[in-house]
Length: 351
Ligand code: CP3
Image (cartoon, rainbow, N blue to C red; front, top):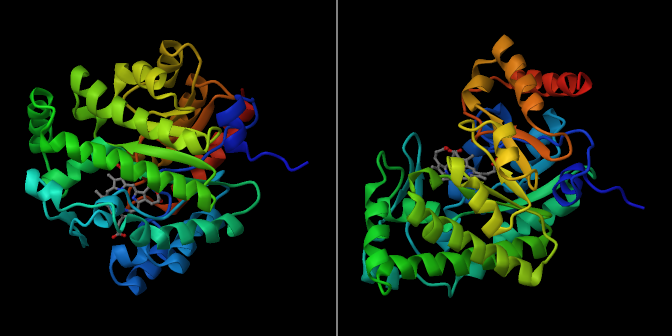
């Protein structure tokens, strides 16, 4: 019988093998081999839409490190792009989008060409499903509607993200508001996107809610929990068994409500919480993923070794996936990743 991959086994059955490990944003600028391909590809979007190159950069971190997952190389902003919004990535400034802020700009978005535009991404997944090593799980992903809407409305990376939060409060007063239509469109398109990723070969899904930390309770329930719950339910209509990890960054003590209502298998945790407390608050019902501070990884040394031990002590073997609390930073030395992985195996032996 084929042995189940450690990441999938942990997410589905809570079995107490070695802790699976992978890193958010593990394919990227901290790797010289990534920068080389990025230079050849033209724009960042060209790279995302070139199945052969996207496959290659997805596999790069696995050639260096013993990781349990490959995450599809793509971006959460491919959805707005496929809906017809103009999206570009400028060197040094991050993403730039032509903002959506009213009825007319939402009306211009459309799902008509969604499948066709995202076809290259499904092709990347299909290629990867034949090329990832046999013990490595292939993760597909999307951004959660609130986070994607944040970039769509702010027009890119914004320091205070006030426009989107204001739009959300206004929409609470007026159900017909354009913001609610935008969120519905994101739920529907993200559900389709994930279903097609699974159809092409993704074995685990992660939903990135990077800006969950902006939301007070009422908005958190309506614009983080509810849309993600609808996506998860929608995907499970077609693929009832697919393991799903939610990552509501900074959700803190809302994390329990999030897990209960969204019915994810795994909860991604940032470094603002300790895994022991989250495990207690959720009665040991969920697999927790995280939560090394990417800056600790960047700095390395004794502090890194100690922190890896701490995380292992705080978490429960069998329901922990070792990861960072957010994406790896471009300045991170590759040797520090090796030290992190060695420390993890040492810490587990000492358990
Ligand atoms: O290795 C992987 O994780 C796979 C691919 C991946 C990328 N982005 C590639 C990328 C994934 C899973 C993402 C998710 C993503 N994209 C998120 C959620 C996670 C998080 O970090 O909060 C968000 C908010 C985005 C939007 C985005 N994409 C921003 C704000 C930026 C610019 C800032 C930055 O981090 O670089 C990007 C660009 C981006 N996405 C790069 C990569 C490798 C760098 C682009 C380059 O090579 O020039």
